[in-house]
Image 1 (cartoon, rainbow, N blue to C red):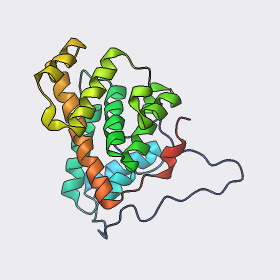
Image 2: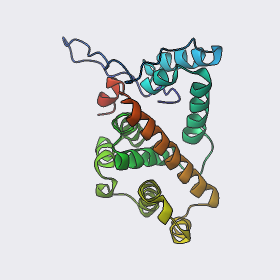
Image 3: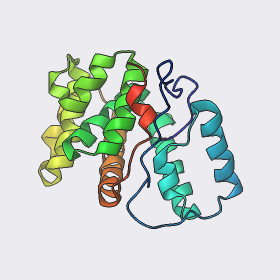
Image 4: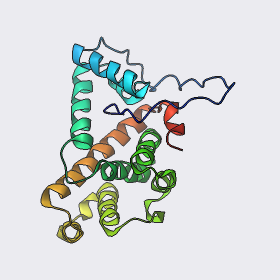
Length: 208
């Protein structure tokens, strides 16, 4: 889902193989799509042109333009806006949180993004299965430990956890951004679980 990227192209089927269709329906709720606003119609076309497909999370939100536009704006600000966190670090948070929540949609889509940004398919798989198995540096491990604790035990987050992030080199704003990305994906995971949201199958073959 999210901002179009020239590097995330649709995977091509093997020679002679029939293309595999995406799962239908995208979600388990009967919510007919609304007519897209001009802004969202342009955004969908941008995704189609640059990715080769429209991420199914956007299709799922298309029943309500207000909700779709709010989701896109928040997502793009968190994942692509100015931050002390790299795009890869933000995707790593998305995957670690989604792994904790066992979110099929987000693990599939954002596991592909980790593979893309890192250029390392193994790291993408490790993040999906268990980020603790990956050879992370101290900054990354501390960041993901915090995001996962915030996901699984939010009432137990305290000053000592924030101080660990500071000692790992994160600024006050960075700590906010870690929390904001983790919080956004906890919301997205729950919506995806509640609606049985199905990822575009193209994600499975990207950057492998």
